[in-house]
Image (cartoon, rainbow, N blue to C red; front, side, top):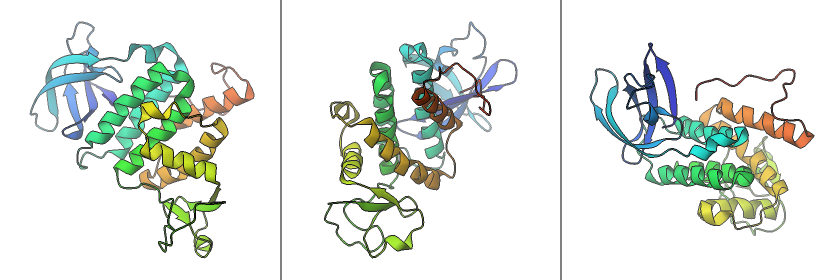
Length: 264
């Protein structure tokens, strides 16, 4: 379950991500009642087997079997927000018209399990999931050839990466992009590693926080360019990270902060 909103006094509309059918929306009637059999299946991050009936505008969930709930994700606020962002990003990426993405479904489950087990590595997990999400939709960044002319690059020194073009640029074409970002070899190697390595194996690589930060600097405008927006949970996470870097407790309010919505 990726997202939910209240409907009437007792119902919910839920956004689901399925391996076979991609993203779909459905109504869970009565799921806000404490005694409802559907209540657990409409909790954030829940993995469940559902039986649905065809409705007039939306399918209706009639039965459920909960498989996984990721209970420890709720034990720490920042870990909870990280998991929320992973689900929100998936919902943004997958329109209901887009074909099912079995690979991305499995990547999301892996990311949630790893966030639960390794909350100290959430920055790496989020960046890797963002990269794999882009690749699953056909937007894998070009790193070994110029994204404009196709010239093979030697992979040494500093290259310029263009989020709008979607890859690195050769010396001749770098002036064609106004949003170019300098990437050194370490950052390019980290991006390549995130693209080709399974998430659970990626955590064994000692990628430094400064490198992950540079990957984020390149990824953020790339994601924004493909989606036209980023989830509000990402903005909230970035504000938490800024507080952490400044030594400010996450619970301490600050001027100009935006409140996060109660519903996921």
